Image (cartoon, rainbow, N blue to C red):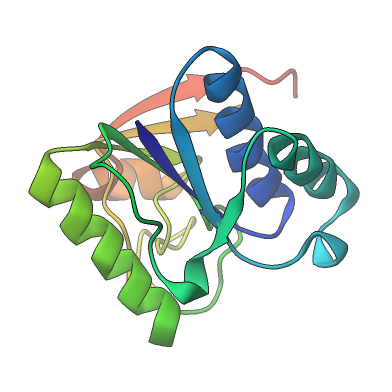
Length: 161
């Protein structure tokens, strides 16, 4: 079982796209996200609609979805470009996700960067979710080099840039 956390920008669409592909491959996937489809850029909204044809998007602000413990926790909540601290309810939820993942031994995989890390400085912006593995695009970011303790094993995927 995979728990996914998904944001509202184009990056958010990446998480729901991965969730859909995993579900189509037979994985049991649960997605908790932020925002409504009408607030998303076109590509992210398309991925949200494609995921919703397969499953529900739980509102992360309402809490973590119920269900069996996950084997993998996917983090596609915030990525490059995060410039503000993660505080309040979202900070609480990230803490709950980390507690769940650590408690059941789930492997944490981040898309591009673990949520809560500044791309350029590696500084933690409020709450954050450390990853065992990070899949990033085109090239490593400064945070991957400065904070391997939080990014885990980094895999760079060529997206043709």
